[in-house]
Amino acid sequence: MQSVKNIAEIADFFNCRVDIASLKKFGSGHINNTYFLKNTDADGPDYLLQQINHRVFTDVEKLTANMCRVIDHLKSKVAARESGCAEKEVMTLIEGRDGKYFYQDNRGSYWRMCIFLRDTKTYDLVETTKQAFEGGKAFGRFQNMLSDMRAETLYEVIPNFHNIESRLSALRQAVEDDPLKRVSAVRAQLDYIDGHAEEMRYFQRPQQQSALPKRVTHNDTKFNNVLLNELDEAQCVIDLDTVMCGYVAYDFGDAIRTIVNTRAEDEEDPEKIGLNIPLFKAYTKGYLQEAGGFLIDAEVRSLIMGVLLLPYMQAVRFLTDHISGDTYFKIKFEGHNLQRTKAQLRLFELLYEQKEELDRIVAAEMSNYWKEF
Picture 1 (cartoon, rainbow, N blue to C red):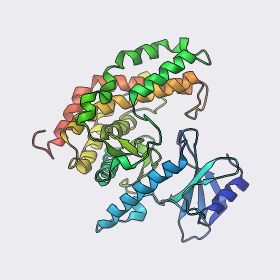
Picture 2 (picture 1 turned 60 degrees about the vertical axis):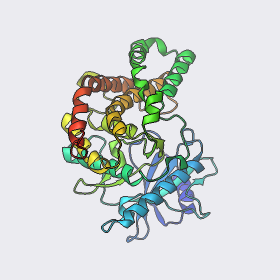
Picture 3 (picture 1 turned 90 degrees about the vertical axis):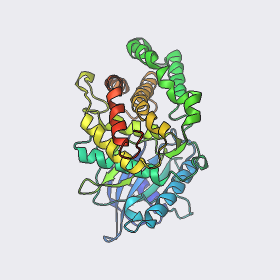
Picture 4 (picture 1 turned 30 degrees about the vertical axis):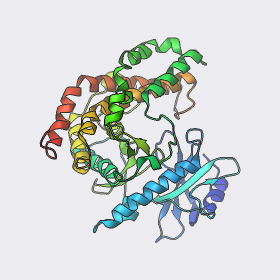
């Protein structure tokens, strides 16, 4: 954890007044470090100060430019609604004293600050169908409000982020390098990944790339990136670091990955993992209620491929990091990334077995919007 003195110096750069004594670590993210700070004015907003992992996000200026463009677009859409409240429904970045929305300290670390939305909560694990439904609404509304924004105006802050061919190539390179001699112990996982690789290249095939439109997508739709109010109703989508050009199925698939798993993402015993189909139905209903009006046929038919791809890809990423020496994801113990890999592969296996049923659920819900479904 950063020193209180260092945090005080960083916070002083931003146009806000904070009580340093209130400093505490916040959240459970894998990549960035986040701290909570109270406002010295009891009537003013509290803040979240984030240390941006610039080993992952190598161009913080472009990342911030993406965030600002998307936030401005979302706020204009919310403000146009009669009942909309942009301050509560869209995250707000705090400007620095130099007019920028990020700061680089004398150690080379990058920081940003945003307003903390009071009376909100997040869940690492979805507990009710209402929560799942509201999560679907939140991300469906997010995509809908951005559906008229030109995706190509955004920078690619992490090249090939959801390109499975690129991820498999990185895995092959890690296997070849094998810096910690871990490959021999993960042959079973490597063989399983290789056995499904061709099918998982679905979004890289020319026919899909010509049929599927590129949209502005969130690209990290874990359920804990939705803020719910005290009534468990969707209020705000957060964590916009990876907002880029992508396919809607990526966002749908990553959300389902974190919602339908009956155990944690890093479950120690993969055999305990199951699928919560009622949560899948609830999320799909909420998502299509908001997004069903703008999606084209090819996008709807690609959703379940996104559901399969994202846990598969996450397993590839975890295994690559395990073999490479745990340099990307934060870990709590040695072998954590391998444990995550095994859990994600088990989730993929279960989803793969149920893909036809999941497709039927999507089609049944979509029939409420399109007659051909």
